[in-house]
Length: 505
Ligand SMILES: *[C@@H]1O[C@H](CO)[C@@H](O)[C@H](O)[C@H]1NC(C)=O
Image (cartoon, rainbow, N blue to C red):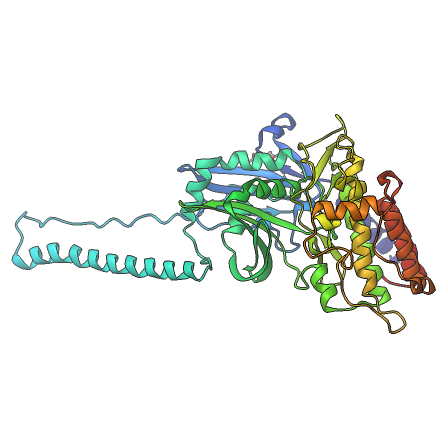
């Protein structure tokens, strides 16, 4: 009996294991699924959606990869939008073979007027018939005026109302593309890093902006609330449309998601008649940038290694090319600096601001956009960028330039490391050698001609962690880009150091 129970348990466990390895099969309505008999397989969930687009309802069924089920527990993909979209996610074979009800569309209640039974009205009826609608009209007008004022006020506070007329979204979407197109994007890109565009829009348009947390050359960064959580919203000025588009495009590169790269949520461009609002929504990290963090706090040896190792992991993932259909191209950041790295709650880094990044197409060995000569922040520019000797046809050159900048960021971190009771104040690299907004010429003289680099104090040699950090920095700062370490090498060296120093990461 006991034996039987055990073998039964084994069978059950095996069944469960088998089940979890086996792909989930779903009904699928997108054109690429046609060849597979309108089916798809996924490691994530099946989704069925019904939407009301262009005056007719559409039923769409797709697979959603595990990678895209974010955030866990309440994936964006599985959220309905009232009046626009009804979505259902489920996790058993063909469970999306259902027809969801049309999202509720409020129908206008007709004012049914009736003629008198004999066609002749008394005075009272006549008054009622004339005055009644007039009264209603006045009431309607007043309501409208009130609503209008309320709306204006809300806008002057630069806050967006939670409830927007969903029919606006509907109009917007039909003007642009159909839902089928948008979902098609999703299913052809496989497990792309982004949500389907229509979901991104819905998310973006239900965010309530709270406070401004930063300003940059592109526009502003706000903290916003969305469904009880904080998100960061980067709002680009209209003339920065290209930067907005580029950054959104890079963030939606397949397989880009990584714990040390800022998590992208949504992009939205909203035309309000007079100007276009360009939004980029991402995870929010309350510590802010590494620059802010280091200005405010010194770090322990453990803290330093965690920051440095996580930054290297993020950069290594960005740089790495993953082959295969579910692969990712190599990406170079081109504007790495402490202000473009965020510090997460667990005191690890998330690399952000991918607006200047370039992607490598290894099949044709080309770079996905024509890289303009010198972009990025002058203070962090590698020597070959400053003197324009960088070989722009060679993708690896851009990676090497990133590594130089990473070395400078490490120097900023290491200075703040509290070892043996000593730590220095926060300073930008080359703070003692150039003015606050150095010109390219000033930087070039310093970095290329004089070959100067930030100072590595001798006393760092007496502490293992600082000694290793100093050594890494030197090997990031070689004039010859090709001689520098790779992000992966740095990651390995720092992993070893963290084991040596007995740090849990
Ligand atoms: C879903 O797929 C199953 C299996 O291929 C099929 O029998 C069923 O008819 C499909 N449902 C719909 C609504 O297409």
